[in-house]
Amino acid sequence: MLMRTDPFRELDRLAQQLVGPGTWSRPSAMPMDAYRDGDEYLVTLDIPGVTADAIDIDVERNMLTVRAERRPVAKSEDVQMELSERPLGVFSRQIMLADTLDTERIQADYDAGVLTLRIPIAERAKPRKISIGLASGSKEISG
Image 1: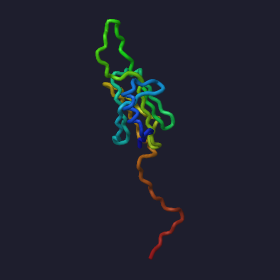
Image 2: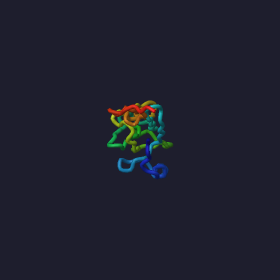
Image 3: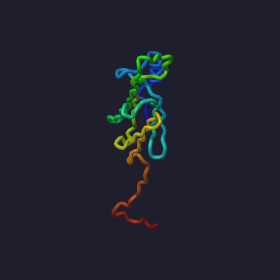
Image 4: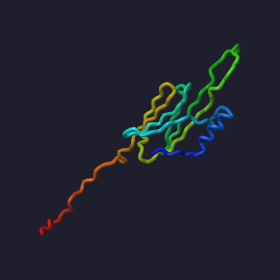
């Protein structure tokens, strides 16, 4: 139901770690899990240290885009950085959603640095029984 849009995304992620922080024109990737649970798909993205107001989620047609920005913590002039490994900058992930998902009813929750998106399966895509009716004017054949 979910399709990756860029098979080289993992290589880009590794390259971004070597090059530096993401920018709006070239964002870094964020780790993601996606799975089906009953009648909905869940997508979880790790973006620790990002405030909820720095997360932007939008869907256009079947393309879901999540963008987030982790800004540096304000430091006084007396602070001397000894080690800085936590990535800063812009993070983004795009997911192509199948036509069988209901993009009108996506829900998003953010807790402990994990963004969870719940995407319901559209009613038209759920399995259903088709009843068979008798054609009008049909006669029973006796033998």
